[in-house]
Length: 511
Figure 1 (tube, rainbow, N blue to C red):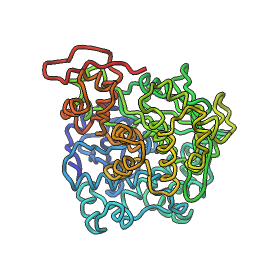
Figure 2 (figure 1 turned 180 degrees about the vertical axis):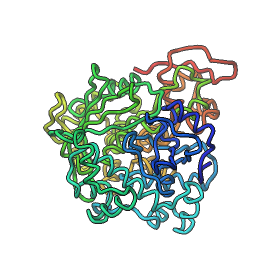
Figure 3 (figure 1 turned 30 degrees about the vertical axis):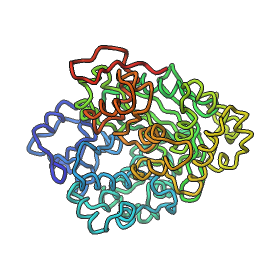
């Protein structure tokens, strides 16, 4: 199933139904046209004998097929199931995640992408072993997988933005325009400028912002996600836009030795199963990184069918609930420390004071957005007396400044793709950070689907148990999706267990 073409009958049924639940889970290549599409493509369904089905876009491209210009495979949510217990597949998935996440390589030179040797070194295996297990699980080499990711990222920038081609090439990971043009011609059979002209009406006239679209798989509980961010919004940094099912915030991206600052606005379009993302022109050069962070923040790549198969019986009302992420792992860690043993409202107050005192001013066209979240450098150098005046107690001051120093030195990287076990150990080695905080950071910043802050009192209350040990025991049936169980418990109205033997799910809504 993972290395070659997929079981055809089930895929063809999903294709005929244009079923959005399978978007990004497989791609259909049509032998009569040489093009591959998403399952949601609205072109006339091809004849069964002309279809080949692949799990990954890279497999379809390696077989000689080109991406559809109508359904645009680059908009599809990513597919990376964590249900397996096979060690080699988990390693291959970790390698793919390192390829997918630009934040995994913040010190890379502009236009430089990680090779298989660097990825293997990061994972602690040999280059040869990595290539073998990657090809066994994905059906393509790491280089082919990376090339497809870069080309699809470039294709999205060409179609949706007015960025110059040189900037598109660098932003999508190519070292030069010449290499970019050659790869585009070789894989897609057309010049990038030709594709730009075909979509010039979409890319023209964007003014001070860049607009892109990102797909997701239904069901998706928009109200729960936006409500979660809205209740935690820090003054100056973020703001919910209730009448438009939207959210906006400021952002700092440090990449290739340069710092980019700006703002983003994201709106959820339920009818199209898309997130509509608007990004300030100042962030255009790191747009693929911003897109990746927004995917993580809104959990757009979740696979609801796999998750619901494990959780629906215990949480029947939570099928559309996702795990909120973050666009900045350091920021999330700081907010997690501030939120220890206090209410959401109190944590928001402390966070807003921190932003007002240490956050860098920034101009945006969105009312209420006027500051960046404090950088690790500013927090590491902050006067403890100033932090005390904000109401931050000494124990948390020590935790925050130790966290900031580790981030400044590059010893602690909080992003999807980071090694979870070693990062949990590193976090808990810092003063004032225990298991609850580390698990919460793993859940939201590292995007680990099986994180479980068993010491969370609200979670214990929601599960109807007493103590961390009882909560952990009750959670065993929900592996490897316990992060999602946590969010469902927090959001599900109080109710009797759905059936005898369920872990006494008496969930409470978290304010």
